[in-house]
Image 1 (cartoon, rainbow, N blue to C red):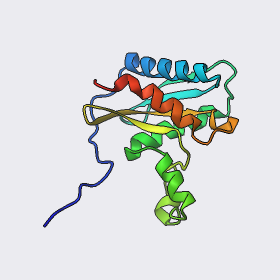
Image 2 (cartoon, rainbow, N blue to C red):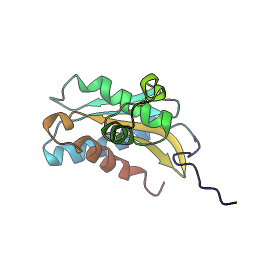
Image 3 (tube, rainbow, N blue to C red):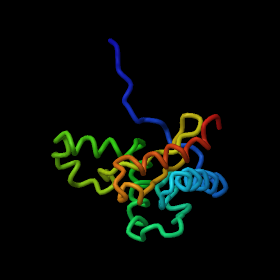
Length: 151
């Protein structure tokens, strides 16, 4: 019998350090600045607790709670929050499970931070999508996560 691996089952690992969280946020800010965007970036640890909140100058304060929710959701479910958005758009976000799970935030811009195959935290980005770019928050998050490649 052949079994398929269950997606998004990376085990949790060592908790992210403040130093690494700062590096990731700085990389995200550098990318956003280069694009002329204002973003708010949150980094949480492997338990979903905030480690760093970085709101760029002139970033909207409404993004603060969204970044925290995206970072938490990506860590809690070990997958990008954009997948929940895709489920909602496809009409799959219709079960009691989806309705009950606040952490299953259906907005793009949240990603687990994976180092050595283990989830050490999550990143949430908000504020760019509000400027009319459907995937702008994700662009910033993905650019920021370049920091952890090879670690």
